Image 1 (tube, rainbow, N blue to C red):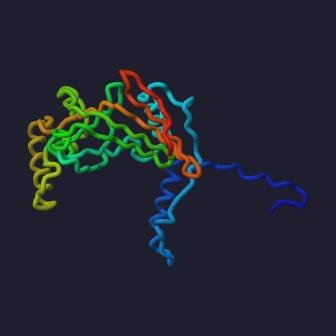
Image 2 (cartoon, rainbow, N blue to C red):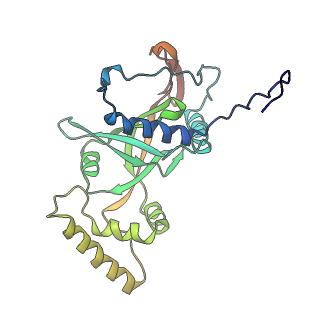
Image 3 (tube, rainbow, N blue to C red):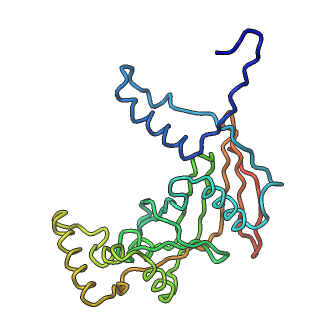
Length: 250
């Protein structure tokens, strides 16, 4: 207890890590169904106040700008900072999208690995144009990438496959990705069979139908949330072997 006339020191401000903030937000959302008042999803919104993005802020090279933002997302300990939506389309233009993990970024493009006989593999075989989307919600940022996709060299796929955990390699050999299977038990039997083979041979070679793709960007957009929905959008567009930087309306 403080004596009369003495000043009490104010508690120092503690900034919770972004990961803790994300966990608290997730917990609150999970509790909403327990509340008596139903939630109107049309009323769910927030103001974006963390940062701004100007033409003077960005690097002239979009890959260097991306590396800067990705490094900030990693340092902030965001969950799955390399997760990205990959959008493809079939021969009739019907789109599909899924989350994959970025496994490499360089001036040549963005690399990810998958089963070549999956739905995305089938679609990329007939229509190799695709789009990527990174969404770092805690930083109020998005990065959109569009470009042409091609398979990486077999040696690059071999090297990455060999670096994966043992059971992940076994799973890649066991699963006919995107194909209809009888049930979960069938998949587990296939996995167990491949695991026995791998244990006997002391190796798990890369399946021929599994490997990497590289998306070579032709446009990249960096989006920073701002108040009143007046978001900052800076786009890089490939033009005559140079990158043209321009601002888009939100």
